Image (cartoon, rainbow, N blue to C red; front, side):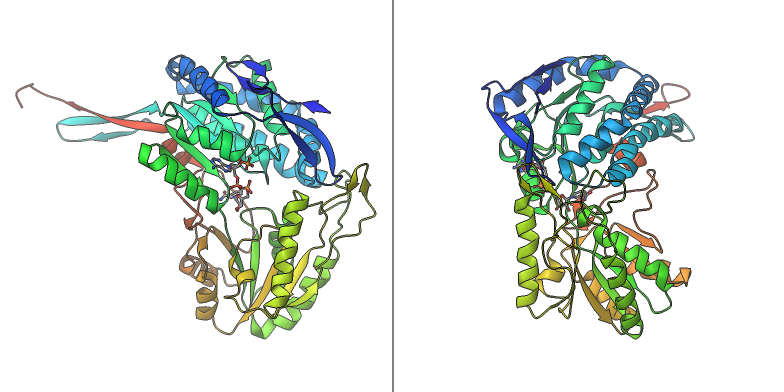
Length: 486
Ligand code: NDP
């Protein structure tokens, strides 16, 4: 059993009051670690540590900090298998996914921001009689708060640009999945990153998270998590005029047009629906299909869903593991019950998975991938974020109807359109009220592009230059040429 500590001012230490929380493997129901249950005093310590090293870290050139990012990427790459195994154990996700996505993309986040920064030109704007130079400074000490679904991947997506732009960090991972954030802290310690540049405080959202939001020394907050928590973040931090980036929930539509390549669309829709047990903010949890191809599509879709290998996350052949916790399993099950009560038909799934896989302390939180049809697109199951292995299937007769159905949502994070007519796909994509639309693909990421949502899915964009902008303040210096009197 691991005993995880906070990492503050370059020192691994327990919570000041010594309290701890248990961390479970959701696939085996086994307690695998304890973490500090930190409070405001621990956060305060971390903020002081971060502030005390701010000027030293901010004084390095961006190129020097980019070199640091490369060193971090190399060190994480050397731990690739350790990270993948740990993430799989902490989240219940299959090891293949943890290797391919979590471990690999955490490395590439650092690598990307290092390389990207080296390509950035000095921003200047020439006038007839003057030159404007845009100077970037760090925001200062920033708070990074992240969720449990892609723990190190989402944390590194914030840590890399925050460090690059010269900020110091107080980070809080989800208390359900703290282990790979700890590996990052260990790695930075081994690399001898100056103490205080990166601080990690473990604990509960309403205690540690809230203290980070409220700390006057924290000048910016980058938050990824649910919309309800995002509201609390905005309510707390906005009156203090902290810089805010909010990446929140989604209820994304997968739109299959009548001219879609069916095999490609079915493969894409299944991947979008059930990757990471449907626990990716970008997952396509509402599938909208042209009525003229609906029978054919549904038959192939269900066949494919039923072929998903669910079970022991540590086996290479497993495609779907458990959901994140027994509580989350019950939440998803309550939506299946609601779907039935709302008049829906369960086409497949709907029950716990009898995987024959039992951990030492009980049965893990496994649920069969579930598809529900015959629900109105306005029903609760089709409009509320479930964030698990359950999707709803709907049909439309015209493209206008498809757009109207897709936009009937308080969320606007992502979506996909499947068609062989690429012009039509592009045109339809622009009519969907959302931050990201893929045509004939899903989760195909170029890290230079803007990432973020509209409506209740968030405020602001991250990725490439948008992350660099968020984690810096810009000063325009206008230098007049010619005689002083002019
Ligand atoms: P939560 O909103 O519950 O938690 C996110 C983080 O916020 C956790 O670290 C949590 O801590 C912390 N937190 C909770 N309460 C507070 C508070 N009062 N003040 C500050 N921090 C707090 O989300 P989940 O962890 O359940 O993650 C799932 C959600 O994240 C889904 O809605 C999903 O759509 C969204 N998400 C969005 C993404 C995007 O890019 N738009 C990407 C991935 C997920 P603790 O865990 O201790 O409660």
